[in-house]
Structure formats: structure tokens, C-alpha cells
Length: 368
Image (cartoon, rainbow, N blue to C red; front, side):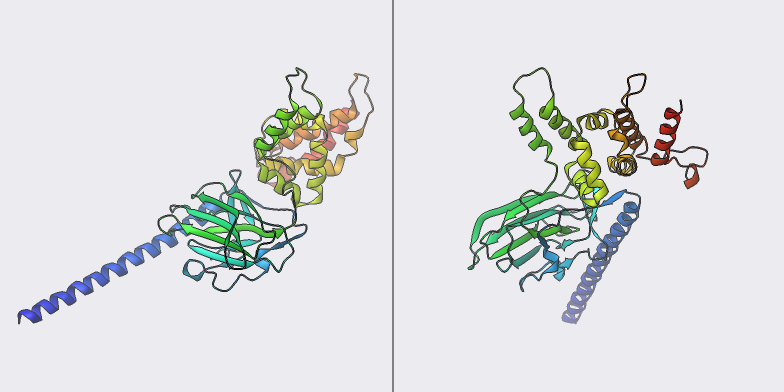
């Protein structure tokens, strides 16, 4: 009789334990789904940009197969999107960028690529935690090359990323390597540790960005400055470029540059024209985003770039090309956010357009 009661109690305990396991698992799953859904709702209200890079002489890792035996947490290694089908997204320069290409590899994960069959010098990527990782304790990333017998080389990159941090650019020399090995290790647990390798590719490009980082500009400026009082020429230009990159962000301005030919044209004009660059940097911080401001400047430059070359001098001694340059830059800064002309400025017909506004100012000035 006692044995029967004891056996019954054991069965009850096991059933109770099983019940608690089911409840805890359900709560965890529902909580995780709630967090992801809640983040998706928040993400709708965040201004995001598509990331553009220079893909000349490059090949994306997501266009080739990894070596069998590579794995991700729960078997998930996904190309060019995350597990719910959305685009990969990372925080860069405190902005949010989405990526068309990349690898979703939640921690812990290990990916092997045989790079010996391709004629490329470097592996590059932007690595971090997908913006859906709003919790978790972080991931340790490692990118290393290996030889034929899986012996590690000195070409190694390591970094730890936490939720909410800006992502980082990685570049690894793969010359003479057999394998490229990418690992994402959990720090303590794998809760929401959504590791991604965005824009991951093999490339022969020696220079990855049109603009240097603030630190690189600092080194250039130090080499050019010898105590002179007059800050002119290349020294002034590099000081202005450094300030431009500091305000906008290295990745943001490079992505803008690579987006289309109009953007390339306006940036090339801006950074090679000391007066224009000085006006833009000293013109004040736009009320909207710098990305929007540059977009407006790109539109203005496409339509009126010939105006900026006008050397005609007015009776007041004003060079028209300089005046028109200041007009365009002022409008690009003010129109970085919606400028309402009348009530109900949310309607398109009541919004000021920078290109049309420029034409009106030009007409009014020309006709006194």
C-alpha cells in the first residue's frame, strides 16, 4: 500500500514538473514572439535607409555555397534575409540601415567557405546584431582564415557586439587561404542573439570607402599642420571633410555616395569645392536628417549645376555662381524635413519643394 502511494506521488511530481516545463516554455515562446512583434511595431516608426556599397570586382558570400558541416543555432543559416523573411538590418552611425545581401547566423554558429577556388584578396562585411536583437547578452564574432589542414593563420578579426550597438566593418586578407571561417559565439545564452554578416563579400578592392573615418582624417590633418595661422588649401579642405564625416557618419555618407550617379556627382562637387563645402558645414545642422538634406542637394545640383559656374558679377559685386550655390545649400538644409507653405502641410500641394523654391528665388532676384 505504501509503495503504491509513493509511486502515485512520484507520478504526480513528474506530471507537475512536466506541467511547469510546458508553462515555462510557452511563456518564453509567447514572450519572444511578443518582443519581436512589439519591435516590429516600433521599427515602423523608425526612419531607415537602404545601404549601398561599391560592389566592383566583388562576389557576395550569399551567392555561393558554404562548406557542408557549417551550422547555425537551430540549424538556421539564412541568406539575404532574417528568419521572418524581412531584410537584414543593422545600426550604423546611429542610423538604421537595411541590406539586400548578407547572412543570418544566430549564435552560436560556425560557417566555413572554401575561398581558394575564387580569385579574391579580401573578405569584407558589416557585422553586428540584427536590430530585432533588442535583448540578449551579446555575441563574440570571429573571422579567420585557415590552411588546407585547418590550421589557423594570423589573419584574424575578433569583436564582441551587444544589442543596440552600432555594427562594425571587418576586412580580412584571404590571400593564399584555403578556408574562411566565420563564428558567432553566445556570451552566456542565445536569447535573441541574432548575429548577421551584412554585405558580406569577397573583393579585390583596396579602398572600401570614398570617405575616410574621422580618425584617418585626424592623422592626415596632423601631418599637414605645422603651426601655421592661415588654414587654407588642402589643410582647410581636410578639416571640412572631417567635420562633414563627423556629423553625417562614415557609413551613411558612403552609402549615400554609392546609391546612384546623381549622388556621386553632387558629393564629388561638394568635397572638391571649398566654398560649397564651407557653406554646407557652416550652414548649420539640418532640422531633418543629413541623409534627407543631401538628397535635396542632389536634386538641386542635378537641375541647376550650371548655375553654380556662373561668373557674372552684379552691380553690387555679387558673383552669381556663389549666390546660387548658397541658395541651393540653404534650401538643402531647410528642406531636410517637410516645409509647409500653408495650412494642412501634410498634403503634397501644400509642401514646399526645394527645386521649385530655388527657381522662384532665382526669378525674384533676377527681376529685382
